[in-house]
Image (cartoon, rainbow, N blue to C red; front, side, top):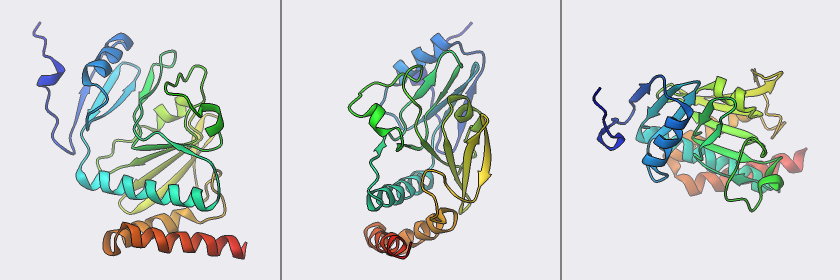
Length: 216
């Protein structure tokens, strides 16, 4: 059998590689070999490992949506912690995922100050964000890890999925950030940022949030 080192593997942007029959120990070894400073994203589901390299447009969208969520939480005076594409894994469930962006909100205080997380004792992120430019999202992994909300952005549409009885159901409103019509508002301001610029858009967005709070 010919064995190739992972450093010999090149994944073009927007493409993915699937590796089958990967044990948990092999998954851990691959994470160690690839390291933290890389552009690829990994997903592990009961022995199947996916390695994906995102497109530039994917990275632009996930950064801008993440900035909008951060601004919203700041204006609402809600403590939060973002952990980006941190690897979340649970050996007992044989599941692992690297979200495009994730937020600890309701459980922020439980992980505050921690530099290492263990999902066997620590809670999962309250919110996972995936931008589906290359149809990479794995809802079943998020369900297994019990992430309360998964937001999926695809082709200009934001889909909010809320965990109920260990399964996601699509909702028009977020339970973490309710009564904000985010399904409509987030895509609108995302598109505005691409024409008027990030900073100018965030200023207008923050003003909109304050207006909503005053009128509520």
